[in-house]
Length: 348
Ligand code: 1HN
Image 1 (cartoon, rainbow, N blue to C red):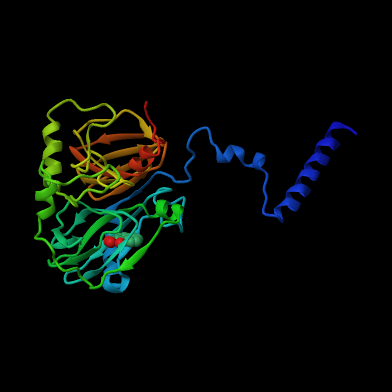
Image 2: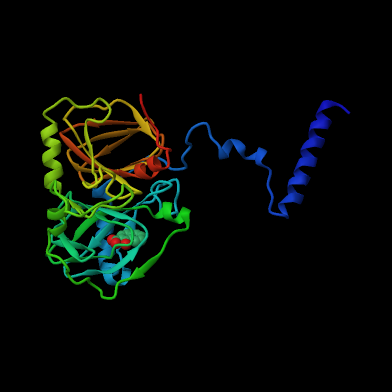
């Protein structure tokens, strides 16, 4: 037998063998090993940008087609363009733009998925979490930890739009999703607005209060006024070459992330500043709150303005250029990766 015939024969025998074992739901590892254990992350997600000016009309149009109550949540999902049909913006994260019109209520429910919101457009809406309301102001970062009841309402006279971030794909992967409706459409108010921030969010805690790092914070709103004040204050000092002036939101009782599966960050970039290339294993969703600039993701340029959202998948190299003084909010699955000992970053 010559060599070529022998190779063909081997290939045929293997193919026949794969067919036979397939009937017993078996498959050979050696055919997939490289894909299963890549030398470095090889995300199916791609870098992408949603320009608010391009999609705002679509969001408002949804308001004429379905009520918040009928929809339960009237949201347009931001789907990663390379992962359509998955309701995912990265492998672990969900993002959407939610609209609530004056007079509407998005009914109370709870689920094991954790959610965060970043208020983008309009005013006069509120979110209630475990019996306390917070009035949503632009740039406010609001959380609804796993299994907390939450509902939204709009008492103002303008449509209100916010960015929702949830760990839906992560929970789907774990097959750990549970949900239930509230007993009433809107929760009754158990505490006055501002109560949680006063008790847990002002460098003090209730006398007998203790938490572990896996427990979410009782602080469910991080007002933009405070975030902005911090960023602008530290902007008077030298910027970090890779981050600009970047801070992470924390549970003030533990120093850990506000919620165990998703972390959130805010950063200031001075006009003209360019960050050095950086990559990390936590695919990250960014929203521009102020200023404008360009996000270069694996060499592709995405120009952003206020309310634009962009995604930087795992291990994609990011460079940020600020054309004006810029404030960015971002969220990722970093705390989940860190608690499993998986998170890596590279400053290039
Ligand atoms: C949800 O509860 C909200 O509470 C938003 O506003 C988006 C997407 C999937 C599942 C639950 C909200 C959601 C969600």
